[in-house]
Image (cartoon, rainbow, N blue to C red; front, side, top):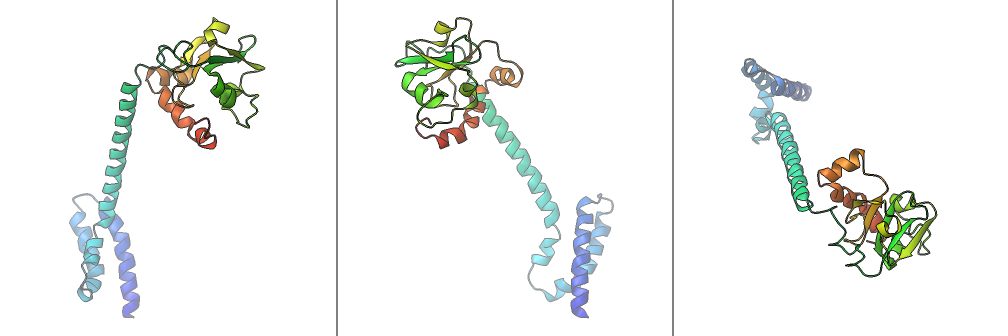
Length: 221
Protein backbone atom coordinates (compact mmCIF):
# COMPACT_ATOMS: atom_id res chain seq x y z
CA UNK A 1 0.00 0.00 0.00
CA UNK A 2 2.79 2.40 0.91
CA UNK A 3 4.49 1.69 -2.42
CA UNK A 4 1.29 2.44 -4.32
CA UNK A 5 0.79 5.74 -2.50
CA UNK A 6 4.42 6.68 -3.08
CA UNK A 7 4.06 6.12 -6.84
CA UNK A 8 0.71 7.87 -6.92
CA UNK A 9 2.11 10.81 -5.02
CA UNK A 10 5.04 11.15 -7.40
CA UNK A 11 2.72 10.97 -10.41
CA UNK A 12 0.44 13.64 -8.96
CA UNK A 13 3.47 15.76 -8.07
CA UNK A 14 4.64 15.51 -11.68
CA UNK A 15 1.31 16.82 -12.93
CA UNK A 16 1.32 19.62 -10.38
CA UNK A 17 4.81 20.67 -11.39
CA UNK A 18 3.49 21.59 -14.81
CA UNK A 19 0.69 23.53 -13.13
CA UNK A 20 3.23 25.42 -11.00
CA UNK A 21 5.27 26.35 -14.05
CA UNK A 22 2.28 27.82 -15.85
CA UNK A 23 0.41 29.30 -12.86
CA UNK A 24 0.09 33.01 -12.19
CA UNK A 25 1.80 34.61 -9.23
CA UNK A 26 -1.56 34.79 -7.42
CA UNK A 27 -2.06 31.03 -7.36
CA UNK A 28 1.57 30.06 -7.07
CA UNK A 29 1.65 29.56 -3.30
CA UNK A 30 -1.47 27.40 -3.30
CA UNK A 31 -0.08 25.24 -6.10
CA UNK A 32 3.21 24.72 -4.26
CA UNK A 33 1.33 23.79 -1.07
CA UNK A 34 -0.55 21.12 -2.99
CA UNK A 35 2.72 19.92 -4.47
CA UNK A 36 4.35 19.69 -1.07
CA UNK A 37 1.39 17.71 0.24
CA UNK A 38 1.94 14.95 -2.32
CA UNK A 39 5.71 14.95 -1.90
CA UNK A 40 5.69 15.20 1.90
CA UNK A 41 6.26 11.50 2.56
CA UNK A 42 9.11 11.05 0.06
CA UNK A 43 10.84 14.15 1.40
CA UNK A 44 10.65 12.92 5.01
CA UNK A 45 12.11 9.48 4.29
CA UNK A 46 14.64 10.56 1.67
CA UNK A 47 17.61 12.45 3.06
CA UNK A 48 18.83 13.46 -0.43
CA UNK A 49 17.81 16.96 -1.50
CA UNK A 50 17.13 15.96 -5.12
CA UNK A 51 13.34 15.58 -4.56
CA UNK A 52 13.01 19.10 -3.23
CA UNK A 53 15.15 20.46 -6.04
CA UNK A 54 13.10 18.62 -8.64
CA UNK A 55 10.11 20.85 -7.81
CA UNK A 56 11.64 23.78 -9.67
CA UNK A 57 13.51 21.94 -12.43
CA UNK A 58 10.79 22.02 -15.13
CA UNK A 59 10.48 25.80 -14.87
CA UNK A 60 14.22 26.34 -14.75
CA UNK A 61 14.85 24.01 -17.70
CA UNK A 62 12.27 25.84 -19.78
CA UNK A 63 13.74 29.24 -19.01
CA UNK A 64 17.23 27.91 -19.68
CA UNK A 65 16.14 26.56 -23.05
CA UNK A 66 14.62 29.91 -23.99
CA UNK A 67 17.81 31.71 -22.98
CA UNK A 68 19.92 29.32 -25.05
CA UNK A 69 17.70 29.92 -28.11
CA UNK A 70 17.97 33.70 -27.73
CA UNK A 71 21.75 33.53 -27.32
CA UNK A 72 22.11 31.25 -30.36
CA UNK A 73 20.02 33.63 -32.47
CA UNK A 74 22.11 36.60 -31.35
CA UNK A 75 25.33 34.73 -32.09
CA UNK A 76 24.03 33.79 -35.54
CA UNK A 77 23.15 37.41 -36.30
CA UNK A 78 26.57 38.58 -35.12
CA UNK A 79 28.28 36.03 -37.38
CA UNK A 80 26.16 37.13 -40.35
CA UNK A 81 26.95 40.77 -39.62
CA UNK A 82 30.68 39.99 -39.44
CA UNK A 83 30.55 38.07 -42.71
CA UNK A 84 28.61 40.89 -44.35
CA UNK A 85 31.21 43.47 -43.31
CA UNK A 86 34.17 41.34 -44.41
CA UNK A 87 32.49 40.55 -47.76
CA UNK A 88 31.58 44.14 -48.65
CA UNK A 89 34.37 44.28 -51.27
CA UNK A 90 33.22 41.20 -53.17
CA UNK A 91 31.38 41.10 -56.51
CA UNK A 92 32.74 44.41 -57.77
CA UNK A 93 35.47 43.18 -60.11
CA UNK A 94 37.49 40.06 -60.91
CA UNK A 95 40.79 41.94 -60.69
CA UNK A 96 41.83 41.05 -57.12
CA UNK A 97 41.28 37.32 -57.65
CA UNK A 98 42.92 34.34 -59.33
CA UNK A 99 40.00 34.10 -61.73
CA UNK A 100 41.04 37.35 -63.42
CA UNK A 101 42.68 37.07 -66.84
CA UNK A 102 45.50 39.48 -65.96
CA UNK A 103 46.14 38.41 -62.38
CA UNK A 104 45.37 34.70 -62.74
CA UNK A 105 47.40 31.97 -64.37
CA UNK A 106 46.26 30.72 -67.79
CA UNK A 107 42.63 31.71 -67.16
CA UNK A 108 39.99 30.30 -69.51
CA UNK A 109 36.25 30.75 -69.94
CA UNK A 110 33.62 28.00 -69.85
CA UNK A 111 30.57 29.08 -71.84
CA UNK A 112 27.95 28.22 -74.40
CA UNK A 113 28.90 28.90 -78.02
CA UNK A 114 25.93 31.24 -78.39
CA UNK A 115 26.54 32.87 -75.00
CA UNK A 116 23.33 31.41 -73.62
CA UNK A 117 23.19 30.70 -69.90
CA UNK A 118 25.98 31.09 -67.37
CA UNK A 119 29.68 31.54 -67.93
CA UNK A 120 32.57 30.74 -65.59
CA UNK A 121 36.20 31.75 -65.76
CA UNK A 122 39.06 30.16 -63.85
CA UNK A 123 42.57 28.79 -64.40
CA UNK A 124 42.26 26.36 -67.31
CA UNK A 125 43.47 23.28 -65.41
CA UNK A 126 40.93 23.80 -62.62
CA UNK A 127 38.18 24.67 -65.09
CA UNK A 128 38.70 21.45 -67.05
CA UNK A 129 38.76 19.24 -63.99
CA UNK A 130 36.09 20.76 -61.77
CA UNK A 131 33.62 22.77 -63.89
CA UNK A 132 33.60 21.29 -67.37
CA UNK A 133 30.45 19.13 -67.71
CA UNK A 134 32.39 17.02 -70.22
CA UNK A 135 35.40 16.43 -67.97
CA UNK A 136 37.21 13.08 -68.09
CA UNK A 137 38.07 13.08 -64.39
CA UNK A 138 34.78 11.70 -63.12
CA UNK A 139 33.83 14.91 -61.33
CA UNK A 140 30.10 15.58 -61.07
CA UNK A 141 30.07 19.32 -61.62
CA UNK A 142 27.78 21.63 -59.61
CA UNK A 143 24.39 22.77 -60.95
CA UNK A 144 25.74 26.08 -62.32
CA UNK A 145 28.21 24.79 -64.90
CA UNK A 146 26.09 21.68 -65.46
CA UNK A 147 23.33 23.95 -66.81
CA UNK A 148 25.54 25.18 -69.68
CA UNK A 149 24.41 23.45 -72.88
CA UNK A 150 27.12 22.38 -75.32
CA UNK A 151 29.75 23.90 -73.05
CA UNK A 152 33.07 24.86 -74.56
CA UNK A 153 36.30 26.25 -73.13
CA UNK A 154 38.08 29.26 -74.60
CA UNK A 155 41.64 29.55 -73.36
CA UNK A 156 43.37 32.77 -72.34
CA UNK A 157 40.08 34.57 -72.33
CA UNK A 158 37.42 35.87 -69.95
CA UNK A 159 33.66 35.54 -70.04
CA UNK A 160 33.28 39.14 -71.17
CA UNK A 161 35.85 38.58 -73.92
CA UNK A 162 33.88 35.74 -75.47
CA UNK A 163 30.45 37.06 -74.49
CA UNK A 164 30.59 40.85 -74.15
CA UNK A 165 27.05 41.13 -72.78
CA UNK A 166 27.81 38.95 -69.78
CA UNK A 167 27.35 40.56 -66.37
CA UNK A 168 29.44 39.77 -63.30
CA UNK A 169 27.34 37.60 -60.97
CA UNK A 170 29.86 36.52 -58.34
CA UNK A 171 33.52 37.25 -57.72
CA UNK A 172 34.89 35.09 -56.32
CA UNK A 173 32.54 32.10 -56.46
CA UNK A 174 33.19 30.54 -53.06
CA UNK A 175 31.46 27.28 -53.97
CA UNK A 176 34.86 26.36 -55.40
CA UNK A 177 38.42 26.50 -54.09
CA UNK A 178 39.56 29.85 -52.72
CA UNK A 179 39.22 32.61 -55.37
CA UNK A 180 39.85 30.50 -58.48
CA UNK A 181 36.40 30.91 -60.04
CA UNK A 182 34.27 33.90 -61.02
CA UNK A 183 30.75 33.58 -62.42
CA UNK A 184 28.87 35.60 -65.03
CA UNK A 185 25.26 35.73 -66.14
CA UNK A 186 23.58 37.16 -69.26
CA UNK A 187 21.02 38.85 -67.01
CA UNK A 188 21.16 40.57 -63.62
CA UNK A 189 20.54 38.39 -60.58
CA UNK A 190 16.98 38.42 -59.25
CA UNK A 191 15.05 37.15 -56.25
CA UNK A 192 16.89 35.58 -53.31
CA UNK A 193 20.23 35.65 -55.14
CA UNK A 194 20.03 39.41 -55.58
CA UNK A 195 19.01 39.92 -51.94
CA UNK A 196 21.90 37.80 -50.71
CA UNK A 197 24.30 39.69 -52.95
CA UNK A 198 22.99 43.06 -51.77
CA UNK A 199 23.37 41.95 -48.14
CA UNK A 200 26.96 40.81 -48.82
CA UNK A 201 25.97 37.24 -47.91
CA UNK A 202 26.23 35.75 -51.40
CA UNK A 203 29.72 34.32 -50.81
CA UNK A 204 28.72 32.83 -47.44
CA UNK A 205 25.68 31.17 -49.00
CA UNK A 206 27.72 29.69 -51.86
CA UNK A 207 30.47 28.48 -49.53
CA UNK A 208 27.93 26.65 -47.36
CA UNK A 209 26.19 25.22 -50.42
CA UNK A 210 29.45 23.80 -51.73
CA UNK A 211 30.63 22.07 -48.54
CA UNK A 212 29.39 18.64 -49.55
CA UNK A 213 30.64 18.98 -53.13
CA UNK A 214 34.12 20.06 -52.05
CA UNK A 215 34.28 17.16 -49.58
CA UNK A 216 33.32 14.72 -52.34
CA UNK A 217 35.88 16.19 -54.74
CA UNK A 218 39.10 16.85 -52.79
CA UNK A 219 41.01 17.83 -55.94
CA UNK A 220 38.48 20.62 -56.52
CA UNK A 221 38.06 21.71 -52.90
